[in-house]
Image (spheres, rainbow, N blue to C red):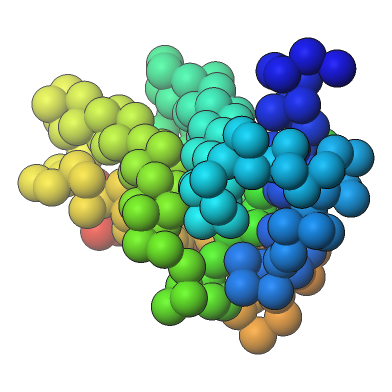
Length: 201
């Protein structure tokens, strides 16, 4: 196994363990077992658990953000019916995480649950690599629609936050619950209508 292969195995194993156990409870020994490497190999690549966690969340957030940016591009690059296109976008972006991203969003739930115990640098890296990057891209479309006279968003960045919150189907009372297609459709449709009620000219 090459050095790069070992690094990939460590990151993959660490994502699995951090997503399952959280940052505080995850042990380097458990990560080594998941990655099928020795703990010494892990420390040859990463100085400590905090550095490893930051590398894991950065890589994982980047992959998830790439997928979300593709959804934005697919639905919002050329809008023909603002409400319908936003609903289509929202239904896809709010759908349960597909293969390759379920562990990332499990990790995000762990971060939210124990944010006070996670190094701030890791949280900042996650936000900048993932959520903020996606919001900036969405805000760019809202800014363009405002310039075209389709919306009235004086602060496109804030409007992007509002839209994402309104179409969210997360139920904080039951973390990990998978919404049905009907629940997604109803939540997204009502959320888009509320957004447009506030931001249409």
